[in-house]
Length: 340
Image (cartoon, rainbow, N blue to C red; front, side, top):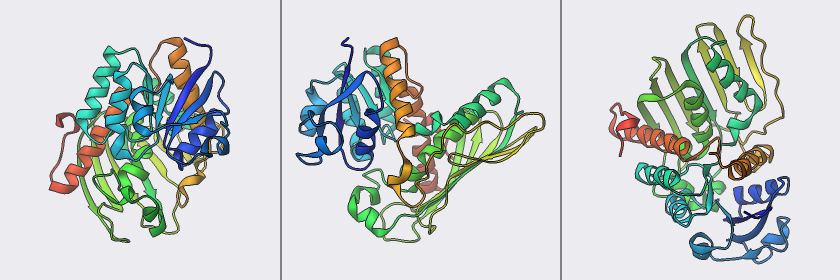
């Protein structure tokens, strides 16, 4: 392996630009190619010697070590599978895939292939959530009994017009898969496997094909219960929160802050950095989380280990999103593990 790993970015609008700028802060890696954007995108994003390629060429046989997929969600699965089959490393923006079958294929490719498969779940790297995870695992917080996430965000009509896939079920749009996915991932990561879900969804603010508001209930394998509330129809938009009621007390975390901490004898975690909220502006999330993701991915490649959020972890999120959508569609309880 070369001392410096080369990266190709598929899609350099919005989150793709975030990756390009984050990679400027990561040692041992350089962006050498991109698709989408325009001819000067590489220079504008800080990588003037990178070359522009077509999507198919970059995904199919681009001469790069790592391909990062920042295209619309509907293209994630097929492209990630193609990259993994080629033996290269692939980093996929959330969600990793839209279908359980594609997610399971990526898990199998990860098990059999040489390449790293990683999903971008930057909020797992926030110091306060990592400390809560540690405290839960060692028992200092007690047993989780009730877990809740709320994502009362707001998106204008212009947000959906800019990228029409965001308003379509076939494109992977909707407040759960696009805006709520990181909070959903944190909830299942902290509280353990989800056994069953129920859900209701609605489209309240704009004429979208997908939900702009969703409420789900979760039953965890531990016996705990949980709720997930997501929306893009709650102006002006408010930061996402995660609340855990345990056998020892209650904690509530926001984005870059501990909102409340009532666990006797256990001090609250120190917040390492301020994580910006995308409650009203998706471009406001900052770079710190993506820098942390990339440092973990590069470490995984160099050390020949799996990244913190590998294909198995990405598949859990896809399975849970699919189960919640199915529960909202049918009005019945759905068990994520039974989806195929």
